[in-house]
Length: 181
Image (cartoon, rainbow, N blue to C red; front, side, top):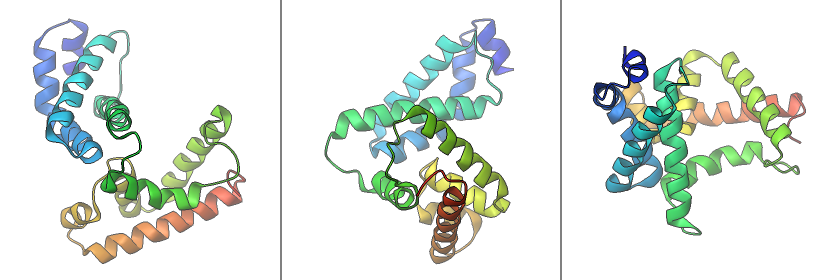
């Protein structure tokens, strides 16, 4: 329905997008930036980006599309804001993953990045659903361990251990596939 409104260029589409995905996207931006005002600015930029790209795009699912746009805009803003400063929450999540993804090759190499992305997707598809959900919530949506634990009714230690085991499995899987050394 929202896609249809976007194709019709109805301004109601922006309101509907904001109502349905605003809190989710603002949460993503806020976890990356740690600043409500910057997060709100990123949300507005994401809504505008969706407005400007649909049509011709016809995203399916729309939620993943707007979340990806919000995340990318927030990451750009984060890098612009921080230069060499560290945002502990964001950097800690990435540092956890870096241990099992670091390799001798440059991650910026486009071919390796695509192969690595496919390897990550294959790996995630093989995880148990609960572990996959925790992994994605931590490393894509950048939720804290406490947020994940609270939402699934488990302890912080439970989530931490499962994330650690998943990272070890990821590292072993990527090594087995020859994507990292």
